[in-house]
Structures are given as structure tokens and as C-alpha cells.
Length: 118
Image (cartoon, rainbow, N blue to C red):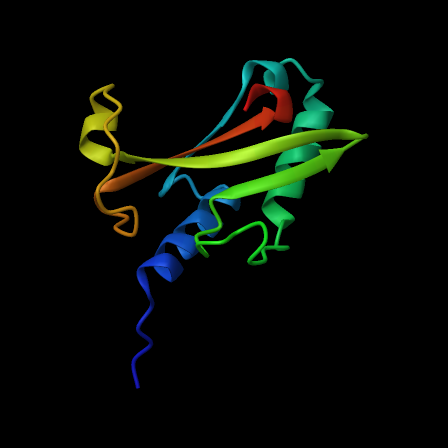
């Protein structure tokens, strides 16, 4: 018996890999404000992101696990994943991906930001 994943499940698995800092599927960028935080706080946020697994229909209506809300020291942060055509990204262009479920053609860029930057 073969497991057949839906498109949303395929995307979710790849997004999970990105949050786990798998650089084969994409890159995580820190916004300007998050980049100004002390390195210890940045690492705490990245660890919270890596461990996040509280997805529900309320915070993940499409089942793709592409948006996360985190709290640290009373401040709220967002992590959002965008999808780009990998070949264009490698040439410095930002062209939206047509098939975010395809790791061979899609490059993920996750941005960790303060909630006020969204």
C-alpha cells in the first residue's frame, strides 16, 4: 500500500522541513527588527520555530503550515513562508512558484519578523 499525500500535505511536510532549518528546501531570513535582537533571543526564536507544532484549523485553515505565531518575553513574532521558482531565485529574481509542493522547482523563503512588521 502506497501513501498518497494531498498537495497540502506535501507542502506542509516541506514547510516543516524549512522550519527545522533544512537548507535543502529553502532559507530562513530574519527581518531587520529581529536581526537587531541579541543573538541569544534570535536563537530562542529559531528554537521555538523549530519546535512549533500547534497547528489547528483556526491558525492553519489550508493545512499547509506556512504561518506561525510565536511569543517570546511578552513580544509576538510571525513566521511566514513564501514560495519562489527555484531557477529564478538562483538568478536573483523573485518569481512566485507555480508548484509549491515540488521541492525540485520551488525555493521556500521563511521570514521571521516582529508582528508589527507584517
